[in-house]
Length: 268
Image: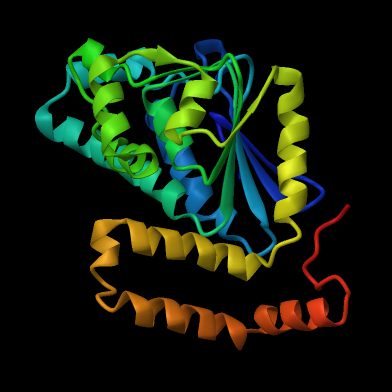
């Protein structure tokens, strides 16, 4: 499928590359990009041949948040029209967050407002050291509401309170300190090598186990999902038992005992 605001393609290892492709406006998102990202993460990313997803931005900036023209339209629209827009925005972030494949964010330049939201729904984030982050919504008279559940889940209430209300700018090392970023590289030339190094490790892992591991974290950390498993110990016991008798679980154990690579092992 062709997209207007994204570049989407598979690489040789079965990794789905999703590139925000509006570099002329710093990859700010509008209603079209919101729709297209939702489509990618509810269709393309779910295909069996996809081992992982890399989300990045074309040009010098990862994502500057909302497109000013799109935001201007919102200011001129009715409450019901705005509610329809914000629901679609929230659904987009939820689609990325719930994607059963590992999502790796490669971040450079800046991640502002909703750009931080995109970072927060990535499972692994690698950022260039001088990347600028900011939850700047309060300066515009609004708040980071649609991204709020995902950012708070990622960095906790304490850091969220400080960053939501200060709207301060901070670089990648501070983002790493608060848990938004997992690895920092010195300059942009080192970003793709770090992505490939991380993917090499991921491709050695069982695809099914990766998916279950992600679901396990979401089930145990999101309050509304955690409430579905009142007997937490029974839930985790059944999860492991299911994996032990699964095809990949048995293949992984046999491969370890036989000192060979399991069938899913990624390319060198």
